[in-house]
Length: 182
Picture 1 (cartoon, rainbow, N blue to C red):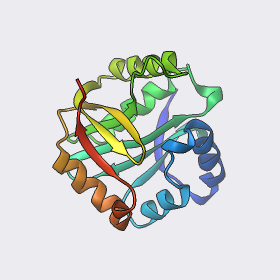
Picture 2 (cartoon, rainbow, N blue to C red):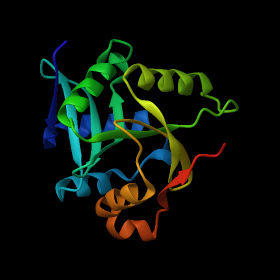
Picture 3 (cartoon, helix red, strand yellow):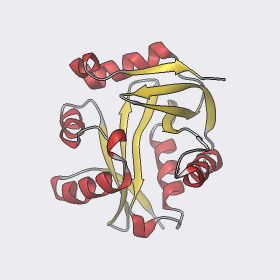
Picture 4 (tube, rainbow, N blue to C red):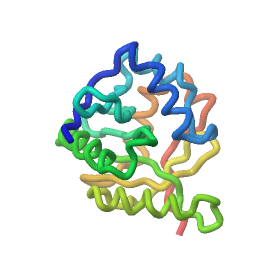
């Protein structure tokens, strides 16, 4: 297994969009055209993960000099459970060395239909070296728990990062860090 992360090409677009739509519930998805517009404008990076040239998945990153936000990470359904997710995370840690790497993941809500999947995802990220951070991220109608490597992310840092990515969309979509409910 030799994972590479490469900037997406137009030929990847169908695979990317199909995986994106299948991997994330509608309430968690940013419109795909907006993501790709931000990527085209240099506000984000759409990275394709490959193993010996074969499409494995993707990571959609929003970054600045100090932070690297894993906005979306997905592995092809047929490739899950084979260590690819860990390899992609390892490649991201290397690529963004020196920056605080963080992500937003579903909260561990025991009443959620996919509670077991949420626990497994949390454990996966813990095993990859992430720690639970003392904050949540609200993006649109969804509140997520935050995990990171390298330290906490402040509300001001997140706002600056997201404001640069979202621009005027911030007037329409509520995106912010909030204190963790205890």
